[in-house]
Length: 197
Image 1 (spheres, one colour):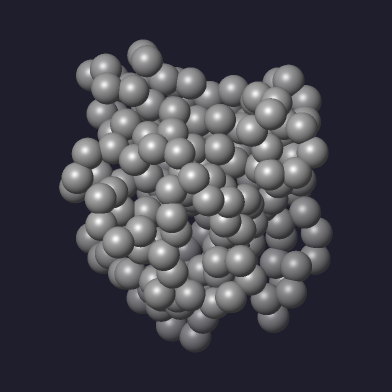
Image 2 (image 1 turned 90 degrees about the horizontal axis):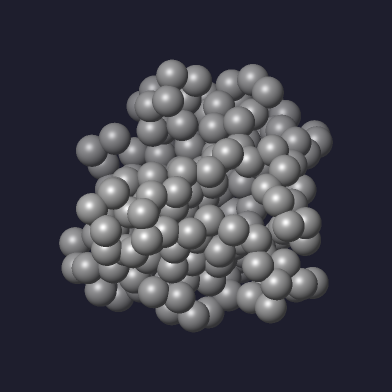
């Protein structure tokens, strides 16, 4: 649930809290290619009944993502969600869990699990890719929290897994997020992921 953050880092409100209990995706826009799916399903959730299933197949244009646009660019933002990766794609690819974009549509950061490695969660910012200390197994529910906050000389990205800090990445520029994305808008990277809460 993306939420507003005060200058000191304390959450002051939420823009979206979604357990994916309704059939439609209220407030989300979807990116769905051939042999791909983005839909709310019952019976796959961590809690309650519904969850969001995202999956991309092997077709040339396959991709699957859901985006939520914030009312204004945010230099302080926390995104928390429960994730379960069912399948990963080919070696060299990855399964993005959370991506943030600026108002112009440029990708600010990506938090992802690298395919066919050790299950480690990474933070990608531009050309920099920084490993966290966390490993996430396939077919296992995990709570992921990603916090973007202003620092002294730029922004700081903090990642927590199941409540424990696993990585903090300083960025030498100030980032302001306008769009939160789950899933993958990149083509030809097969995966299957369920997002809840």
